[in-house]
Length: 278
Ligand SMILES: C[S@@+](CC[C@H](N)C(=O)[O-])C[C@H]1O[C@@H](n2cnc3c(N)ncnc32)[C@H](O)[C@@H]1O
Image (cartoon, rainbow, N blue to C red; front, side, top):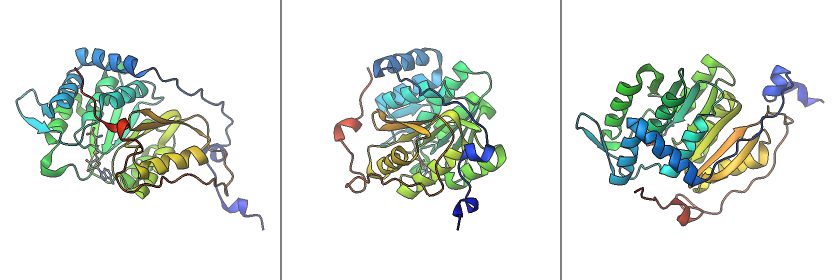
């Protein structure tokens, strides 16, 4: 029996379109990315407040309120890379999974405001952090960016699927995944982000030094030739770029490496030590 007719494949076979491959992005060195982040901080208040918060541990709202970052600190090297990539987003829609302290969100929104007239940044996070942490940052970003920034209090597994149903395949050019860190949730985020991701678009995975996220990135590297995989392109951050449609056979599967480490055991502790910016 020919089973192929019962299965539908990826985007290319669905659309029937023949499209040229995208050339994978080339990443500048970290010092160049950090210099660009500092230059952005000169122009954009949220970036300068993020850098101050990273160094002091406290985000300070211009009205005097404050928010403690605690352990939720996305490093300058990582946000500098995210900032570089979001400028290359092929569509005006970008997405984050996990608001947390809103620090990556502050830098991404500022980058968008600096480079594009029209943009829409949607963040899924139904929970937030304990003790209401992050609410001061969220209020500040709402004041600064209005309707171009939307935080949706919905699990990403649901919210990304709804967004796909509303906007369709290829609607988003950039997705940053930093929500639930359980393996199956990161897989679900990837599956849905992939549906939303335009050709040439990016999906970034925070905490990819840790086994659950590293395993997802390993799966993609072994099984998704439609993506270029940049492992640990910044400390603790891996990035993939969609370079063509999904041309796999319906039965395709390649074995992939699952790290032989448990829980929150990093691949290399040296890679995740937070660095102070002076
Ligand atoms: C590490 S924090 C995100 C940090 C953020 N990138 C920043 O710059 O501060 C993880 C966030 O993911 C959220 N989260 C957990 N499970 C989620 C899910 N299923 N969908 C969406 N967000 C989720 C948590 O509420 C938490 O706020």
